[in-house]
Image 1: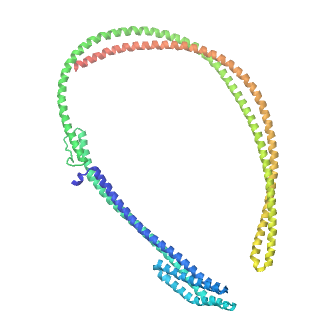
Image 2 (image 1 turned 90 degrees about the vertical axis):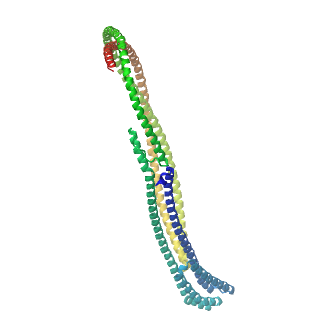
Image 3 (image 1 turned 60 degrees about the horizontal axis):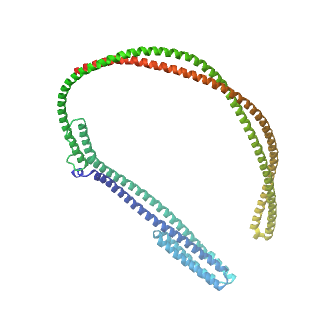
Length: 566
């Protein structure tokens, strides 16, 4: 532990962090290695499966080309054509053999599947080669029939068996690839569990070491030093300071606390010396204070007597002034109440007139707004009428288009009928064409039926549009009449508003006069009230001064007794 005590705190923290980092890097490296290994294996497997599947499919196509070339030889009559097709058959066989060899090279672990297929195709080629050679030398119909019979009996069955074996081989290879993929997934899951287990164990171990370093190197010595500092904080400097011999920051703190201890002991000695000096100074100060108290009592006593006499005279004068101002305030209160009542009545009339004027103005504004809205409604009805007219025109145009579609459907139906007749004439060769012509005819009939229904819907839309035009016109006429009535009401309301405003102005003038009278009376009342308040304040101040002078005499007497006692 001595080596740990001499490490700086920053180095201890770096040690803890470094330990955690090393464990983390180890876990990450192990996981990366496992993932890379699985990725390489998976990539190799996918590449080989993809390559072998592609090669196997190409080889199967070569085998099919081999057989199809043999049948083409049956239809060829020229010597050059037979030679060319024979060369193509040999090339297809060679390409098949090379492709299967490449499949075997790409997937050597599947040799038990691939080699039997190669052997079966070798048997098929051995059976087919003589037949193809014979077919390449025939030119007469009889020889071609013989070659065709041999192909069907000697060649085609063994080639088809080989192709079936080839398909089974590819299916088995794909199934094995799926099993390998499942095995790879299991390995991946196992690797992940291993990584998790190693990570948890490594982190727990690193955490335990970090806790040990933190506890032994930091927490315990700092806790001991904290306990000693708490004892020093209560004024007890007898305890010894731990960890002074350490060479880290905790040791430096311990040595600093030792300095605090030394200074605390020195302060205690200074306090004892200061207490002795203070006791001597207190004795001397008592003697001096007794002399000062006698002089102060003599001077202050005369001042207090003079202030007490003046306060008594001021209290009598303030009482007389307060009674006079109170009587004046009572009289002005009566006058102000009467004036205020008159002003209130006039104000009530003015307020009622103002409210009536506002109501008339609001009615006028609402009537004007109603007239404006009615005008807008007329315009909107006209616009709607125009748009409905456009809708009627569009419906008419749609009807023309529907008629055109109906005509085209009729012509299509006629053409389908002609095609059916021609197909019947062609016999067996025209059967497929007859089916198509029948489908076209059915579609033409459905189109004609649909266009008929659309025409009926368009006729309904046109009839509804005409009814909408008439209804919208009637709505516009009704809104126009409403607009005229609203204009008449607005004119009458404006005349009533002018008369109401004149009444309101006259009432406002009367209210202004009563307010001025009330304001003047209020000013007089306020002056009387302020005079009464001032006199009351003077009386209160005089009474307070009288009480304070008596209290001052008592306090001075107590102070002098205290000074003499000290």
